[in-house]
Amino acid sequence: MAKCEICGKGVTFGKKYSHSHIRTNRQWKPNIQRVKAIVNGSPQKLYVCTRCLRSGKVERAI
Image (cartoon, rainbow, N blue to C red; front, side, top):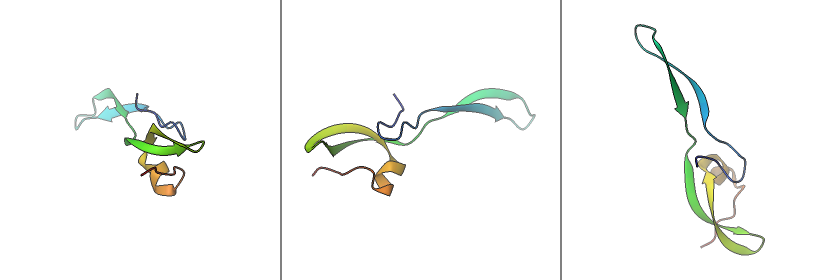
C-alpha cells in the first residue's frame, strides 16, 4: 500500500542496529497522503508522497 502513484516510491528495507550491535530487519515507509488531484481534466483521489506534492508534480483539485 505504501507506494506513490506518481513517482513509484515505495518501502525500502534495511537493518536496525541496537547498542549491542544486534541486527534486526526493518523497513522505511514513504510519507503517503491521499489527495484529490486533477488527472486528465477530472478530479480523482490518488495516493501521493509528500515529495511529489511539494515539488508540484501533482495538481490539487479543490
